[in-house]
Amino acid sequence: FFSVSGQSHTPLKNQAAVLCCALAGVPVTSVPIILEMNHKPVERIFKNLEIARDQHVRKKEKAIKFGSNQKWVDVEADEVDVGKEVEMDQKRARWEQWGGLVERGRPDTLVLFRLFPKTTASRSPGPGPITKRDWKPVAKKFLEGRDVILHTDGAKAYTMKIKGVLHD
Image (cartoon, rainbow, N blue to C red; front, side, top):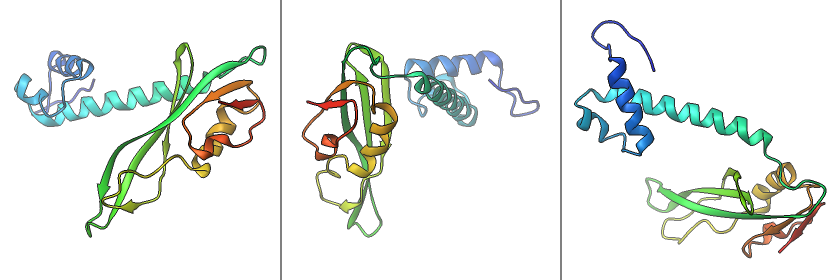
């Protein structure tokens, strides 16, 4: 929440209503219409919520450990393409691609990481599978020496030799 005096003052009850809408999944563009208020404080609260979520996730990610060094555990990895941006010349596309790791049976261990695929032709169906360049730092950080059985699709990057990781 925020406090401002003068014309830009937004009562706390309105800020709380915006926060409730944000938590309920109401789109940021619909909230000013529903609550009959200016869009700027609405956007500010949504942005503050995203910042708080980001800080919380980063704090929790540091404590996530896959495996236990006492028994082997199953970990799944995959990537997803969430959108593309076509450049002005309409010939090249820049993709947004994310990857994830999760220990089976423990959804609280979900780790997401952004991938940086190369640009492609604008009509291509996707950026392709994860690359070794993107996978290697993630595998070393989260999986190396943790005694895990890694379940993935057929991307070649996942088959890298990593100490303490068996690939399925």
